[in-house]
Length: 252
Image (cartoon, rainbow, N blue to C red; front, side, top):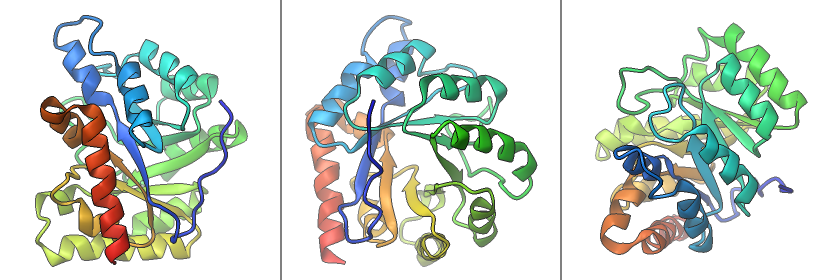
């Protein structure tokens, strides 16, 4: 899949990547063949998504290997593969060569990813995997807390991008501190030459303040869009989120 690097200018339209994991979650509840995450990815693209995100977890609780294989070969936008930093997952990434790999923390007991990577403590473990992917021409990103030390360590690790974990903000969107942390980390990341992305727990109701942060180039949103799709359909749910992001960007 040929792809060019997205425009990283803060003035460019903010990108929306749709995480399709929870389409697979519904399918896995019955261990059947529907709904198909690939079909969902194609609907999202037609509705205006700039890219597709899929998280291949070590425990395979939702997205399966075959899903990633098929999605990688079929998407017409860009594929962001989320994964843990394990030998198995690195080998998968090197074989499939998605546009971007975002390394995320994984704990089997968690329902969903509950925090960012401890990139300061785990730098020595992350560095070899990141180097292999860079050598293979894969863009790299780290899912981190909006924390000064984590942002600076990410830069030291040589990644292209950081994705700021918006969970604290999503749990307390009216707290000035949670939004301030995202703004500060975004400014720092951009000043260090990192592309700044964000995601986790964002919904149509709370996305505007995050979308309005000028340094954030890209949002990764999944659960709320799939949930909304139950009532209005996936195409409409993607378009609603796109419109909310664009309105927030225009009004800042």
